[in-house]
Amino acid sequence: MAASKSSSSSLSPTALVFMGLLALQFGIQPIVTKKYTSPEIIRSTVIFTQEIVKLLIAMIGITLNTSTKWKDITSGWSIQSWLRLALLPATIYLIQNLCSLLAYQNLDAITYNVLNQTKTLSAALCCFLLLGKRQSKLQIVALVILLVAALVMEGILPLNLEYYMNYLSNTTAAADSHETTKFSLSSRHVSHGVLPIMLASFLSGLAGAITQKSLQSGGGRNALMFTMELCVASILILLVSFATSEDGKKIQERGFFDQWNFLTLVPI
Image (cartoon, rainbow, N blue to C red; front, side):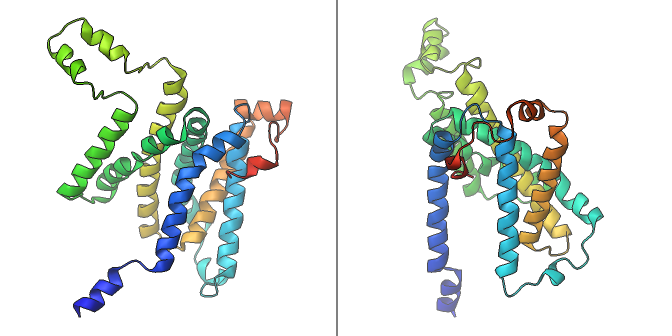
């Protein structure tokens, strides 16, 4: 009985393969995005194309899945339920993607990935606030360590013991030591890199909690179907924004695919 329970809880080889591929994707995504996405590109066009690709992949996934039928997963669907369940998380994910793309273009891969892991912290917080899910003491310790690692990575929390000695003694050396952290709120690194990825990480946790709550209240909605709903909502929001936003004006002046090339599709 114990052996059966142990085997059922262990990860299958397929799961391990997909976990490895996911880890690989997380590692190379910042590298390929920074390399193949021009800093001068109109960012909303990248996000728009990304949503189109995600929509097509979700449609193909539903079509190829022999255990699901379009008639079954669309049964009971309505525009009202789509707007109620998908509009808010789609808007949040859209802002998150724009922030992530900005951070991709201004941070190195290691810094991006370390700071991006703070989304685990925001997910735990948002799940507690929205779903009432509490973390164990060990999980809380792990989350604190994750936060400290991110702060150390950016030099916000120096590891220099002399810095703290000088700070406690209230000497001018503290100011000098603080300068060695190279942390400046006015720097482009922070304003176009650190802050966007921290905001994106928070929004990721918030949108994830809202999505989970939406799926639970949506009567067992198919995950791929919900992905399609999110994509359609994001596409429509972007289309509306093109009429009034700065990016919309740039598209009219420079064209949708300005600064694009075939390799721009690689990170997408």
